[in-house]
Image (tube, helix red, strand yellow):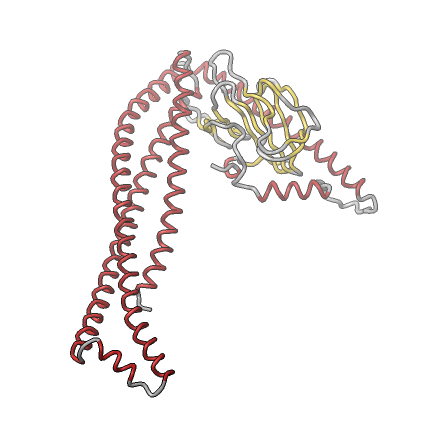
Length: 406
């Protein structure tokens, strides 16, 4: 067959890649829009209560960043669509050349046949055979020759029509994306007002710097206490697991046995948890991260930062908290400044869910992924609902973001 076969296969491969890329971009766009919607819900609540908080400033910042990334995502979708359209047009030009070649060859064949006489002479060519076998071969050859030429033209014409329809579809999608981009740019202009509001909020916080610093000092103390208590709980739990592992394997008398020795079931669970890095569901159905893991600069202060042992997730009031993986509830405890805290063991990995109002599980319960374990508490003064979520491996806390699926 001619070069059209390669062109067709290349188009299928290119289209498959492009479709996958489009789906990923569309999913990201939807997620960013969801983040903006949640930010609007959180900001509407705090603005309604007329209470200026650090979280309000952080949420405004998250909203602005999400909107900017959303616009960039749409721009990339448009460029991706333009590349696909350009590639498809090149393929159509190749097909048109193939069709012209085949048409010329077909016309040449017809002219050659006309020179030799009427179509009946084809039958004379068959009847002139030396025997029945040769006659059948000549008949089969004539049918295949004519049929093959016509099939080639039909196939390439069909392929060209499909590509034309695809280009019309892609151009329609491009117009839609351009329209969407115009809408997003208009919304970005509106976000300038949010930036102004954010600047006003930061300025207001600076005027109350004494109060802010007092709250920061208290928050730092609470986070340090929480981190130490969680670390102690985890050490005790690891010790319990180590003892259980030794009892299961009492024949082992190795005094250098690992401090983090696990039962075979614990090893399997830990491996399964590790294998799912990047695919763990969020601990709440809807939420945005208002404070990241590690150092976070405090708005309205001169370079003051807070070290966060996990992530803070702003979420609508009354949101249910879900286990991010299968495991066993190691601890349910009330810690000052963190309300109720649930710690779930996944082998030598641990997930921590703080600031819960209601808890639906107790120590020793087995939980499955996405099981509801409690609800997020709301601040009595501001109405804010924030889940503090941590992830530990042995006695070292990890940044939860790379483990979650968005």
